[in-house]
Image 1: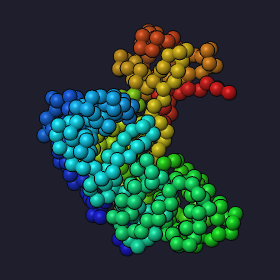
Image 2: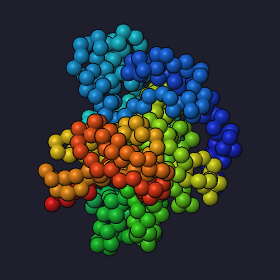
Image 3: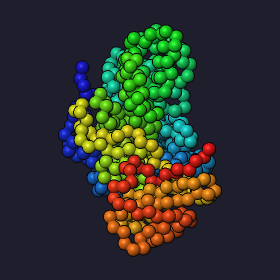
Image 4: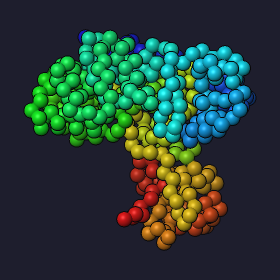
Length: 429
């Protein structure tokens, strides 16, 4: 069996980068064509966006902005009505009439928590899930038991489209009904499971409890939750090799695990950046920051979507021979907003403080004490400590947050590289 889904996975990295950058102008042009991004990109020449540095100068779109625009457009008059907030290039007849131009049809529309509405395009394997399934060992002819929800959210449909592209047969298990799902896995001889790792554990524990054997279930693709090494080992001890996939309803598959168990390989259809939390600025490879994704998808042309997830680029290529960038996987959330004495403090404010004081490298705002009697301390890495710097930084923090703050200057490399900018250490018990 072919170890790779296609020849793209083993391309020379320089050839891959050239191909991705060559595809960027068309993606930027598609983004300029949708109302939500037209104004922000009005002065951008798509033909000039052919490098990562040029891409990094374009604005980010974060989930809260997407939701806010959708919410605002839901209550507008018919002429401006757009349930996707102006981000989608596809829709259905009512949307085309409201916008006075024709849009190609979206086969399906979904609702994620928020609620945020997402379109599905017409492309085969629209969310590009087949590659991740293939890396986990799934092949045409396998029976895949999908336990993501088939209603409202797109999770199960993302898997379904990828499995169909591989030539697999899908059992639409959905969520809940553990006994019935276990019965189906046993009686249909399911080869693979796709769903959350927590539900797979529940199923396997129920199987052990009831004496129900699952000798055919050897492979699993898990997503939607963290799956630590200890849980991987727990599955393996019961005969199931589980592989993580990192995906989003907005941009599809971002990265996937391989047999090497050495981070997650970035999908061939996306451009991934890691930026400093609270900013739009890329960080050096190895530095933990927020995952930002540009999917090469003209139907839903979200440029530089901030996922809110933390990760970091790993050095080198995957030991399996796949040559794309690797990331460490999910490392927490970038949105570390905390409330101190009635005021919200967020990573963007810390970034603004650092912008005023370029002497500072990495910084962390630590919040301690008890509610209503809390205190803030900014720990800042500096190579040198000129007189008055700590006081000046404290004044900047107060100016930007309206809160008093102590400042501790430390040597470079003192703070952990974990992407945490606001560290709320208070006890809420």
